[in-house]
Amino acid sequence: MDARSGRAPSRRQQLVRAATRRLWTILCQELPPKPSPTPTAEQAELRRELDRGRARHAENPEALHAELRRITAASKPPYRSCLPILARPLLAAAIDLPVYSALGQSLPDRLAGTVVVREPRPRRRRVWSAPARRAR
Image (tube, rainbow, N blue to C red; front, top):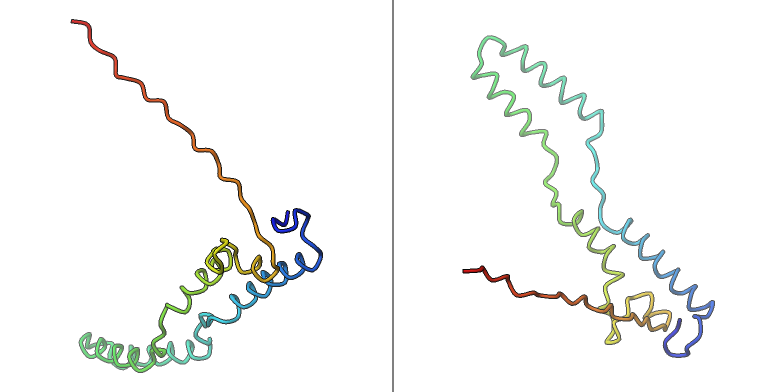
């Protein structure tokens, strides 16, 4: 129900609201970078190099450890922050937050020109009883 007119929302308002929600979903999926796995060819080359290092230094554990540390340090992928990945759920939830207007509208409602009125739920009253007194 549209609070301004008292009637059901028009087709245009429904379309704008649905399209806004769908576009926001697509934006949240495509905008933040996705984690990318290491290609299997790079993994196979790293494994071969580690095996060669193990074969070369099989008798000397200290040299083996130093060689393996050197190989893995040279093949580390560039540092990536996890913040863009954590931003995805926050962006997805932002569409439903009523921060876009003083009327408490979410973004789709604001663009469609509708006002959503939610009836406040009555609070349940607790009944407190006095503790029973002990008989003397």
